[in-house]
Amino acid sequence: MKNAPQHWVSLDSMMQESDEGRLFVDPGNATVRDMSDVRILSFRPDTVRQLYRGKLKADVLDLFHEPGLVTFMGKRWHAGRISRDSGYQYKLQNADLGILLLIKSFHANKETEGNHLKIELSPQFLHSYSEQEVQQRIDELAQGVLENWCHGGCAVHIAADVQGWEPPSDFEARLHCRSKKVRTYNGLDEWDIDSHAVRYGRGESFLFGAPNQTQLAVYNKTDEARAGDKLDYWRNVWNQSGEYDPEEAVYRIEIRYHHNVVNQFARATVDHETGELFDLTSYEGLYPHLTGLWGYGFRSFRYLARPGWFDPFWTILTRLRMPEHSDTVEYRRGYKSADGFSGKNIELLLGNFVSCCARWNLSKNKSWQALQDMPFFDMIREHYANKGKGERELRNHMRKLLEERWVRYGRAV
Image 1 (tube, rainbow, N blue to C red):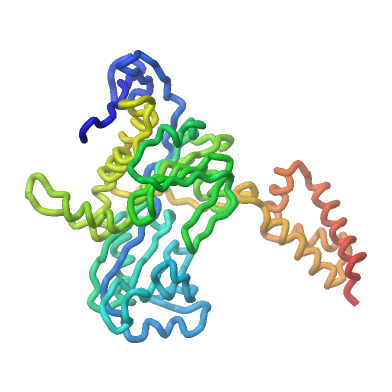
Image 2 (cartoon, rainbow, N blue to C red):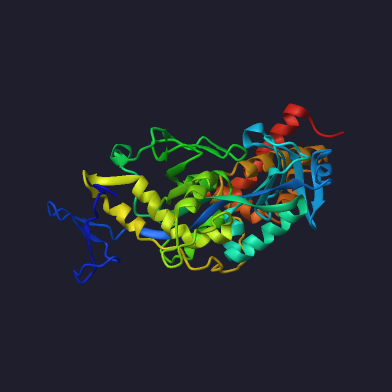
């Protein structure tokens, strides 16, 4: 690339030049920056959207006569319609599996061949299997939806989660890219699953680029995970790094590739040894190239320390390498913690619980005993402990709510 920015020199603990070094020196003016506090907690594909082209099977649309639970390919799914903005008419979703099927393209007749299926995969699903196993499992689902199908393309998000760094106040000013589309969000206000839109706040989150091209997203992953009740899952992932500090915010740097961009790479990228083009239309075929796509993204979005020189933090990110295979998950049972989400559900549960106690004319003592008998009482107690209320305060709070319910609405008779 003509006039491409250069990297500072990185030195290790022995003051030897090394790609692993975290002491950076600007060769132009001898500025020194210590980046040893930066820890990479996770680096992996985060979201995959696999397209399939084919003809819809005759009976597949029968699943959507009424919204609700249906059985498909031996699993239970929630069937329903989906917003036209998605480009599809129907969806099958199983959040427990971490799979969403978008079915029947708005842009093709149901009797003709087209891109009638898109399968979206969550991080939990991707992290549980190798790329070969992922492809095999979703191809089996495609077989249940389409006749004469083929892979139509693959979109991917590649993400690094870090601690020891957060976007400085001049981050946007020092981030250079061709795209004119830049969004800056101030505080996490909303996480919209259907439209895949995130609204943030306090100047801590940025999105560069258009959705149908290449995008760079930088945001507070701790806040986003807590809002989506996924913080316990991600803490388990981050703990595997051995460097996670639960008292410190985790920031995510994410490169997002639309399937059209990936297809452009497929048409122009050649194996230097054989001269053959690469097949990047499937996740399995794309996975070996994720490290290369990650590096390309950081050449497209250039975070500079000064004109002509990358910021050392960007240098650390460009040197990350994807594992040779993704089946490196340590399996263990993960229990929800009370501080892993906003706590709104616990407040709602306690309010509804008090209403039921009043309906059944339970005394304050019996109501408290019933609350303690709940299988997730420890989580309720932990939630209030995090708010500075011990078990005695929790009991008094419940008794006050129950008494208020009696006074305002009366007891059951």
